[in-house]
Amino acid sequence: MPEDQFNYEPIGMIRTPFESPDGMPIQPVGEAATEGTVEIEESYTDGLRDLDGFTHCILLYHFHASGDAAPLQVEPFLDDEQRGVFATRAPQRPNPIGLSVVEIVSVTDHEVTVSGIDVIDRTPLLDIKPFVPNFDVPPDADTGWLNASKSTIQSKQADERFL
Image 1: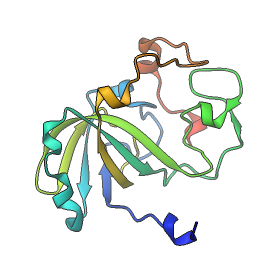
Image 2 (image 1 turned 45 degrees about the vertical axis):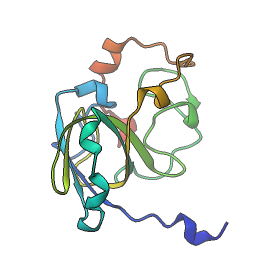
Image 3 (image 1 turned 30 degrees about the vertical axis):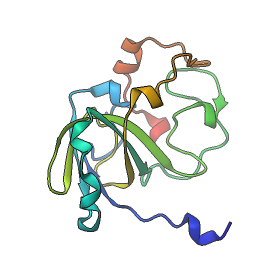
């Protein structure tokens, strides 16, 4: 494939109350009440049409503050054991791309207000996709090594592994 097919440009910026990973939730479910704003570049605002009909969306973004790529074995946030990076949600990755499913609060001219945000302020936004349970939640999904309860996930915040 030609190399220029992989030259992504941000379509906007995610604004949140988190200036650093310190104290930030590690998944959207970790702080469902935290609101953020997704600011879309003017040239992409027509793409927001009809998004307000969905309750949730998927944000794809660049982990701009995650540091160097992690080794292929990492200690994930809900485990004491080394796991393959592709079996975790660790922010240090070979390609620093993040994903969050957030609730849509409102959609206006060039902004989407969301709740349950778990990213650092000024994170570059790569894409927005509507969350569709029939497409995005297979009925027979298994979570592999991850056996943590919802309450455990909700109590977790970023630590030194996220710096």
